[in-house]
Amino acid sequence: MKMEDMILVSVDDHVIEPPNAFARHMPAKFKGREPKVEKRNGRDVWVFEGAGYGYMGLNSVVGRPKEEYGMEPLSYDHMRKGTYDIKARVDDMNANGILGSMCFPTFPGFAGQKFQAFGERDVALAALQAYNDWHLHDWAGAAPGRFIPLMLVPMWDIPAAVAEVKRLAAQGVHAMTFSDNPAMLGFPSIHDDYWDPLWKVCADHNVVVCTHIGSGGAAAHASDKSPIDAWITSMPISIANAAADWIWAPMWKKYPDLRMALSEGGIGWIPYLLERADFTHRHHSAWTHANFEGKPSDVFHKHVITCFIEDRFGLQNLDYINKDMVTWECDYPHSDCTWPESPEILWEDLKHLSDDLIHKITHKNAMREFSFDPFSVIAKEQCTVAALRAQAGHVDILPRPGMGGAAPAGQGERVVTSGDIQKMFADANAQSAI
Image 1 (tube, rainbow, N blue to C red):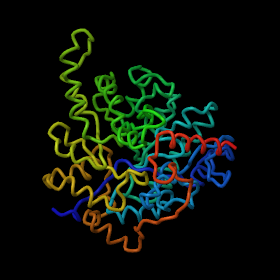
Image 2 (tube, rainbow, N blue to C red):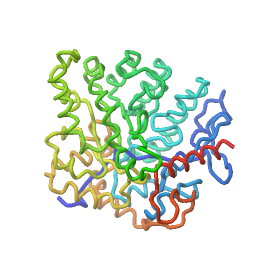
Image 3 (cartoon, rainbow, N blue to C red):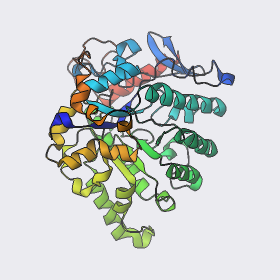
Image 4 (tube, helix red, strand yellow):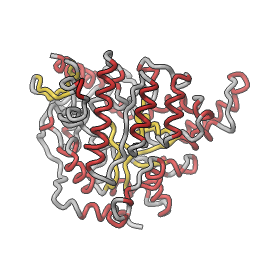
């Protein structure tokens, strides 16, 4: 097998919603109250019911030289078109040799946090459903066979959430984005039976619960003076705390067909987490009264889908991870993404594996777990890295300097700190509110 023969499906990318995303899908009674983009102090800002929300670019730095990554986009003109335009996105996927992509929200938050926190619930629900309809029909549906559609649900209203899962699953949506720790958002813990109807409907309709890093808990900034590199380093691993909590959660016995995904979490740390979980169960279950059928690692292996961007260590230790649940991600358009060299970078990490295992990790596991069947739309021989790149000769993939945006977080050659980044976002939120 050669690199060019791989078929790549990314289970974690992101979309910058275009300015008109909500307008066509907002119900008639709420027309005019949908989220929209306004120009404020030279910035394109998402506005919902009069409130402006921060940097709408959210690390949309793909296509820039790495030296300019600290310069956050302030408008659509500062971003590569593939971040928000579906035709340009498909072109960028082709140029990167990627067949399929699952795209998490940007303006709403990875798990729809802006809607979850909005006080006027009927408007919030209408906006959330409008987002789902835009994502399904205008984004994923505009390029059949290229996207795994992903739904939001109203966490504040479980009957409405159940209805939304049924509505979207009937249209072929089998992935739901959800907080890795809803208690951090003011909702009941995952150990509370409040969520049982939602878990049941997901299990019944083959819908994967996708928990993205930063959707509840997040990596902590050690101090304002700490280099931002330290925070970026621990960011994926920060989901380990949530992963441990999910292992011991009660839904797996109640709904044995339920599955979840640790989105953008990496895999290299998982062998130790599972070893520690089994150790904890052996040493402490007599007094903690944990009740497992088997071991904690068995729960993880059966129910949890994992993914990685670059993770050579994890790929060398697959014997400690369920090979049938490991998937790959590109993370376009965030600063960790490997566009436009994803095949080259990935191949260096997994070329030592068997062809069968490479196929599982690059596309077969994702297709099975997310009920994604691109081959029913596109001939399989047209889905390889080589075939897709052959369609992208017109796509400019060279880094584009000077795209513009906010001033870099650091000054001169000094180290960029956590304090720099937090101040940058605080200033952006203050300006957006004006």
